Length: 201
Image 1 (cartoon, rainbow, N blue to C red):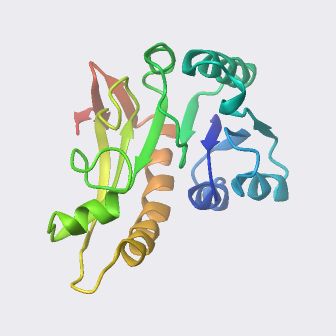
Image 2: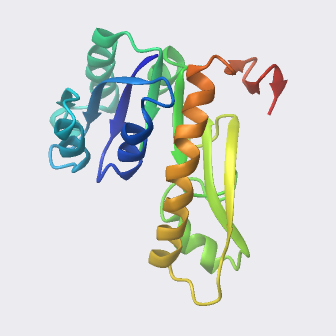
């Protein structure tokens, strides 16, 4: 199945997807970033994947940026759009256009800690567990149907950095697995629900 990956930063999740792409039946047609200095672009170039930068700061509004992003995505006609550390809030029009084929990974056990600084917030809230969630993207920020989660214990001596590192290990394992469910046709978006093998998740 062909897809595009959207990034904003180092691209470590992108790397795990690239490393597993043959096993998960995925061809990445393009990696798109809203930041020209995103290291993930170098990761893509190293393996011959086309890249595209659309600097969000060059656009007068969120909608104009999303329009250009949509234009680029549509040139590849992807069956799946993978958000891998893409740090942009997408407009309602954009999310509706690609609803059902756009996945996002979020470093918390949603619905807890939507948005940013999830690791620090989890520690400050006195949580015993933390982790990662993968969900379909809808117009609600970090609020689409949850597909899968992976949980880790928060240790007494954890800080935001140490917790982030341990969550990242889980991210790299879980995201390729979920993408594979989608490329196999096992994972679908129906009636605003995530459905795997015919069962609502």
